[in-house]
Amino acid sequence: MAAQSRTTISTKELKDLLDTGADITILDVRNDDEFQRWVVEGRHRPSMVHIPYFVAVEEPDQFVKTVESQIPKEKLVVAVCAKGDSSAWIAEEFLRPRGYQVVNLEGGMLQWGQFYDFRLVPESAHDQVQVYQIQRTARGCLHYLVAYENDKVVVIDPPRHWEQVLDFVRQKGWTITHIFDTHGHADHISGGSALSKATGAPYFLHPYDAIHPIDVLPATIEYHYLQDGMSFRLGDATLTALHIPGHTLGNIAFLLNANGRYLFSGDSLFIVSIARPDLGGRGETWSGLWYDTLTTRLLTLPDDVLVLPGHFSQHAEARQDGLFAARLGDLKKTNEDIQRALSLDKEQFVSYLLSHLPVFPPEYVDIKRVNAGLLQPEPEKADELELGKNVCALASAYR
Ligand SMILES: [Fe+2]
Ligand SMILES: [Fe+2]
Image 1 (cartoon, rainbow, N blue to C red):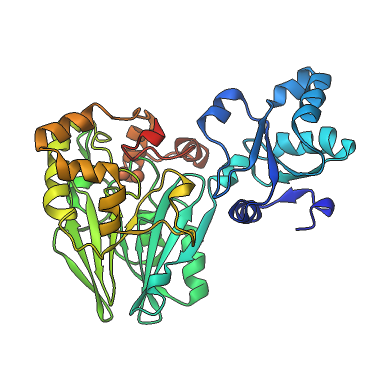
Image 2: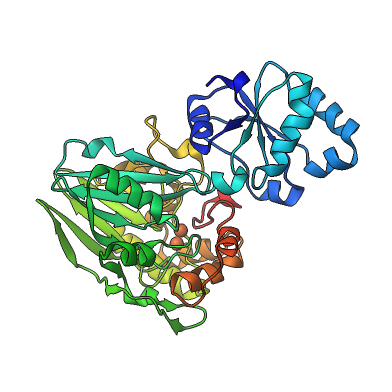
């Protein structure tokens, strides 16, 4: 990009710079607590300088001094704040007049959190179905499309910003035939129900996850029952639901049998680590179920199954081509929590799980309420609920 002539950068352009490893500096001017919570991350780690906005307001000379001591003038600076206004002011008042090449991130971290990257899973390029992994870069959430018979598509775990999915699908000339949620999510607001209303495509959820596990109240949204063994024909391929309780009671994974085999593992198997059992407030009970599911249902699947997870924790988990995917056989060699499930007995495994639980974000209880239709937040409140990276995995990386 011609940085000198530009004053702003879009989320997509920033993502591309991070993917290619461009030598940039992020100047993040949010407050300490916001900065501690989450930052811009990508495949390549940018230089990060954090100087809160209030320093520029209250001690402008100090602000300039810190900028000049920490940011080299020859590098492109991307100024970032919560919504894009404060950082725009900082860029124009403090950096550009001093000769910095600076661009402001449009919409700030709010927009960064709502950026989705649609990627074809290359293994499926010549299969009977084409699988797309939709990466929500900032939050580590992964959503999926399975396109079949040239003009139809199934959506798995649609995000809150379902309009972006619908735009993509319409550009391809596809019609959505089914919408699935692998489970009642705690970390992000599902777009399943809204996408179903907008398109008329049926929305499926396991009935156990249509009960809020902490409130013990039934969902008010409309949904179709999704149950173990239900099979959906997608042209010559089949998509089969596997009930895999543990992370939630109604947790589902989908096995896609085309020429190749794909497992949409949702929140169960990740590239690093596995899903945590406690986000429904029933960790002690669900840990044992989770062990049984892992050892009898998931880890007994064929090693050649390509696991497509519902989350990643670190960008480094991506393959060379940027996709978050791995063969089950490879995960058994690299994923330490999978190895524990295979080597420990039930009691040992449960005690391992319960002693390694990451912090429980309090907003997750409300997100589950939203997903059950028990709470309807204003868009700003919904943005707030979804801020930051997900913590759905047991991985120590999250703690
Ligand atoms: Fe989850
Ligand atoms: Fe999740």
